[in-house]
Amino acid sequence: MDLPTHERWGDLSSKRVLVRVDFNTPVALVNGEITVTDDFRIRSTVPLFKDLLERGATVSACTHFGRPKGRVVAEYSVEPVRRRLEELCAGVELLENLRFNPGEESNDPAFGRSLVEGYDYFINEAFSASHREHASIMIPPTLVPSAAGPNLLREVHAISGLLDSPARPFVAIVGGAKVADKLGIVKVLSAKADTVIVGGGMAYTFESTQGRTIGQSLFDGSYLDECASLLAGGHVIIPDDSRGLALGAPFGPEGGPDDVIDFGANIPDGYEGFDIGSRTIGRFVAEIEGAATILWNGPMGVFEDPRFGVGTEAVARAVASSRAASVVGGGDSVAALQQFGLEDQVTFVSTGGGASLELVELGDLPGLRALRESRWN
Ligand code: AMP
Image (cartoon, rainbow, N blue to C red; front, side):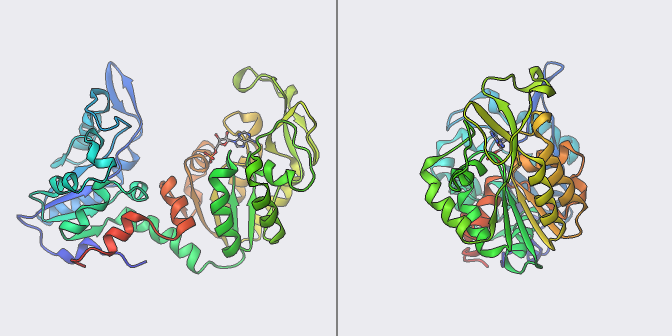
């Protein structure tokens, strides 16, 4: 995908540049002060800021932060982020939370105009917000010369490169809780990938179309026909067996290992499936080992409870040890990779969340379109 970049602007002395970032970082109270607890997003933008400052620009950044819903709420002030940014890269002004103004989320042109007032250039470095038609994403490219930031470009190229010309076999792995959230991506991937592995809570709706019983596992009856036709297409594979608990058995830290039950293909009434079983793990891992391209989004079970993280860990280890080009996206699969210390062993970790899913599903995002259609390109 062709997107305009900022290198073409050359010398920036006496120019003012506004950078839209996603610094919606986790914070916590530390020694009585609200403090950023994960500064990954801030750190990864510092090289861009330094480049702009070295080229003589005056640089401001703007971000959303939490959900203040169009009102000024002290708790959602960007102040803690501002402090961390100042420590990591002095000389960049961070504007107050975009979502303090209702015009941000309603994509109000007047609010968008007020943002770039006095600026010469705009850079969108917020891939993870680019699926939202919000003013700070959509309006600036219509008003000033605009560019895609380097991290946004990396995200877009990792995903679109993988979908446009994957080395084969291309194996996609889709998991997570809800079939409603992931069916679109399974559909698109089943047309592009050689195999789509489906696991996690969403798999039970697929299983039930095959006449299998799923007890009280997650299920959404409104997608039965679509799941059945995806399976009939021949590219989607689902678990053969699962592990879980009797209904009402303790979960999380209170639960003991002896409560875990290995089901075969069918889960009886009164029981719930929370992870893929060992036969399934063997089959999924063998598919992953044979892949030349891998896209993974969503866990294979309730991995937050270590008793049901076995399937997700096996998949994570197979993806990490594969020599295939591998892209892992979605908050939970990235969290799983981190939990097992494997995040450095895949080709690309997409931090885009909803934006990565939408880019896979629709092939484009509103914020990318706005950059491409900017009349200064
Ligand atoms: P998602 O946000 O849709 O990617 O789903 C991630 C969540 O799905 C995680 O928090 C998992 O705990 C949950 N999940 C995965 N498998 C199951 C399952 N079999 N039953 C219930 N929840 C699940």
